[in-house]
Amino acid sequence: MQVKSVHLNFNEMLRSRMRWVRDFTYTLPEILYINENLVELVTCYCGFPTKKKISCSRLKLLSITRTTLNAELISDILSGCDVLETLELINCTGFDELKITSSSLRVLRIVGEQSPDFFMQQGDDFVLGISGPNLVSLEVSGTLYRTKLRLTDLRSLVSAVMAFTILPRGTSSGFEKEWVAVRDGEIARDVLDSLRFVKVVTVGGSIFKALSTRESFNLPSRLSERRSLTLCIPVTEWSHFGISSLLHNSPNVESLVIRLSYCSNTCLVLHDDEPHVDGDNNEPYWKSLNTISKCPLLHLKTVKIIGFQVSCRSMKPLFQFLGFLLGNSTVLKEILIKASRAVTGPTLDEAMKLLSVHTASTDVVVQFEPPRLWGCPSACTQKPSL
Image (cartoon, rainbow, N blue to C red):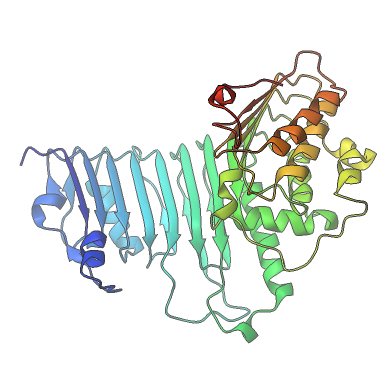
């Protein structure tokens, strides 16, 4: 077989027949796991046979969705794919430890996992361990059902995405809020500490929630060497604590990106209580000397806000934060606000208030890019700059 790319997706077949079968798996034929020409293999509801030789000498990309795997099978796959560069495990289950010893594998993506059949109780220990000395890029996102994420031996890692949401799988009486808060706080501390040498980091979900709720209690974490920081969050009253905590621990950060399009994504975990912030509209938080001293912003050059939309709860808190950046970032060059949907005149009015902020940098430029404006002629679709 001379085919180099194969995509098998049985999820669409199950949908077309109005069926949902949790345990359905199509076992791959031998021609797909013993192959000298295949370069890309993408599967959904497909399984590799166990206790059989796997040999794909040219395979570089392997994406597996909705399959039960175990550590031994993953090891067999990696050992039989000598030049594999990218491995994606999407909504898979069955493994607790990923020890990536492959010299060729550079990219590992773990996107969610299937909900387990068992019930977790307080005190249970369900750990997902990941190690890989040759990994360059690591992503853990989506919904996980774990009590801990352990990252070890990631000496070559350059880019990391930690935008997962941890959900309990148990009875409501078996999970106390205090225990969940402590668990999430420990995960956030351990993960960020493991990634303190990584230059490009993306954070969202449960990690950011933990930082937002525990920053005032001085959740311990060491200073990082990251240069680029991306936050997959909505900027609300709660977000200020987490943002300032990350900026405090990122003294060398040069690029800050906030992806507001995650407002409706599972990365957003709502808080149960109201934030404990004094003053109206959170303004005193970003204007206080305590906040300014914790976020020196000595190297911040570019800020991008992506996915802004008028329906998002982020408008006023977002612009208060941007005002803080303008007033305290001495080498800031650009703030770019990119809207993902049509915006209204009042939204632009709020953005225009940034013009009255005294800037710490004399070279900073603020640009606002709405795709179109409601109630305005087509000429307004051109990119305005503040």
